[in-house]
Length: 250
Figure (cartoon, rainbow, N blue to C red):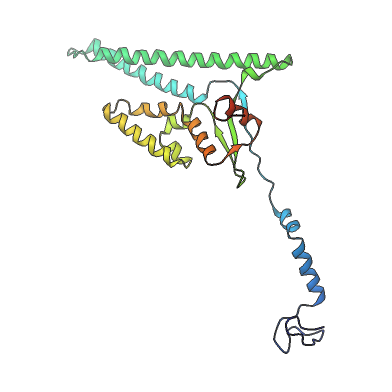
């Protein structure tokens, strides 16, 4: 047995070379080290967790619960304003004439919210009924389904993102905080400036409407941004949805 560095003869019990001081690796230990070096992936793969699969999701067409919540809150607020102004109109001896426009405007808003709530319930029940009927008869259920989330994957890093489609209720409730939470600083800044601008020119009247307006197109804008960053559809559902919306060409 000889030293691997200087070639000096070694005894079986030597731990270090007596000539150069290099640590001695015995044949049994050397074989074990070489075996571990040639099969590193086998050891690592056993410790790797199973990858989390994220897919696009499809559901029965239904009105969003956030829609009902928004309509109910607006209905209650409008009803309170109408009742308060009507009470002032008929009981106060000093009438200014400003009560009637408020009663008319918020009365229309209350009626509109009640109508939208009714239509949402009817829309949901219609699709649930026809979906179950088509499913029982073995017919196509696609007309009664909608894609509510699509999965996008980065070919480089393998990162998968699940992006919501349709109306952005996060933008509706939280305005510029929604894109900020998603890490979309560009649109967080745009929505903030837009909100300040519309609120400023309207003396604050349009301030609460900015979020609901931006919510109509933000989800689609966010998906386009991810595609520009190099993400691609992760499955067939996402690919078909993007093609149907004219975002990509198949």
